[in-house]
Length: 301
Image (cartoon, rainbow, N blue to C red; front, side):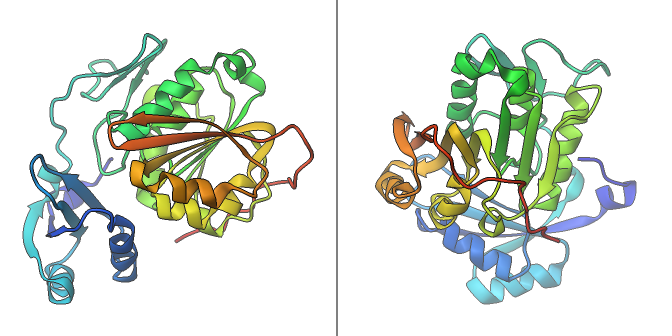
């Protein structure tokens, strides 16, 4: 993410505390209500709790969070916060390699490679929830053969890695959304980093406020399970007749809850794919007429 020299040298503040697993979405709602737009959850080996960190621009904001919920706060140099740590490439079979280090050449990557730097937007390919979707994209030969006429919607795009992978595989009609404006800006920058011309339509939108009138051949939704369940009608309504819906971001313990939310929306569950404690659900929409039209997204700030 590019920043001015003034922005790079200013000191950000980080508020942190350990939370009980399974309450991620509850904390996200709390942070949103408190005006936070940047946070991270970190699981540590042999720890029963999850580390929650929220990044704010002033000490006063960090103090306010501490007064609300306890925890600790510390100053963080923005240059160190955005510093890229060495990481090996992420390989998705033999069809895609995602590199995270600074590119040595100014020429955009080509062939089977994407350059996705580690940054503030989620999704560089390593996490199981993203990896399963990338692997499924790489294996989807049926629609890949007709990629130029395939329409893909990526909900909760983060760094844009799924939308960019679809483009690398030949898809030419792609819309990608995220509620966080910083994520949308980062995703747009990542497209410029990998391709000489823009193609993907990046939109800032909350999936729960979408009017489910769009139809796509493939809908990807890598979101928290609570959001997937709450927005089931909107998400399911975006799948075209004969199309597919792939849901990720679901813990094994949350699988039945999410399945129940999508029953009754005209979809058929084809497959559940697991990687560690995470599961991806692949649905299909029968080839019959459904409500459709142009997507109307409620814009966020």
